Amino acid sequence: MFQPANSAWVQGSPIARLGVLAKARGLDWAAILKSYDIDASGIDDPDRTVDMATALNLFGQVAGALGDDAQILDHFYETPVGFTEGYDYVGLCAETVRNGLKNWARVTLLRSNCARTIYSETSEAAKLEWTIPSLYRDYTQFSLAFLGWAIRRTEMLLDGAYEDVTIHVSSPAPASRSRVLQKYGHRVKFSQPDHGVIVPVALLDLRPPTADPVLLQIIEQHVERIIKEHSTEASPLNKIVEAMCTILKSGDCTAEAVARELGMSRRSLQRTLGDQGTTYRNLLTDVRRSMAEKYLVNTELPMKEIAFLLGFSEISTFSRAVKSWYGVSPKSVRQRVHELPSARASLLRQH
Image (cartoon, rainbow, N blue to C red; front, side, top):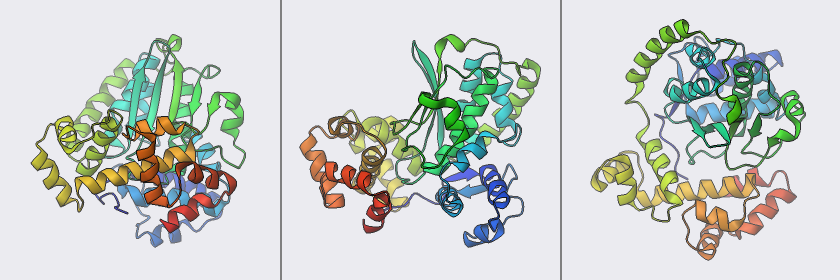
């Protein structure tokens, strides 16, 4: 399986916050970091970054060591304001809830060059969604960490009024109890194709109690300078993967179409992929396989819809592809995972 380039990174502060939980629960945090060749000193420095694949593994390992798959969600919900430097304030100081959510999406480059926070709005609601390139498979715990942070920050924008907020979670419900999930009850929707916080449009023009235009202007000037410095640092491979995911459902995910989406020539695209150690055909297969696994394991989407999202015009073509990857049909993959909790891990080890 092709792995994302080591140039894909995430800021060190989420790792530092994870360490607070690990140490509070008696884990040897220094030893855990050492096993990943990470120097514990300065991990919360805003300029410190950690390889994305390493970060995802760290979150999964800590959750496993704790024997609790919901603690990280609750812990990041309780993250103190300011822990993420200016990233908190660029949203909390906005003059409306809408602008606060938009600001958090806009400054994602401060946090990672591959993960993204996306703001979208319809006539009914706005969504603050967290995404990560489909090449990465097991990012459940890291996603729950973002969700915990986002839920609490959204509550702060709304002055604690959370009754109409809905939560989408891209993974199945945690087996362990969670204070956050108990609080939101039926408004939490699991096994969704997206992952984020949804706010009714009627609340978007409200003024947050923390609104501060003067402070926001100062913070934004600082943030914009940093964004410009990082604007050229996004992993080229992750840009290509994002373009593929956007184009796939059109059914015409050719190298030419992806190159056009990225504003480059087909030859430049091929050269970039060669520099990253892969080819267009291999990368497209990896993206489809990872997306198929996510949809089959974590959602109840119909097979026809999954085939569409992966760019297959026929369910039969999708079924043949899944069988070539896992040796069984899409329906069998889903059944095996539901029947045996450890099936997903076993499936990944075998393939």
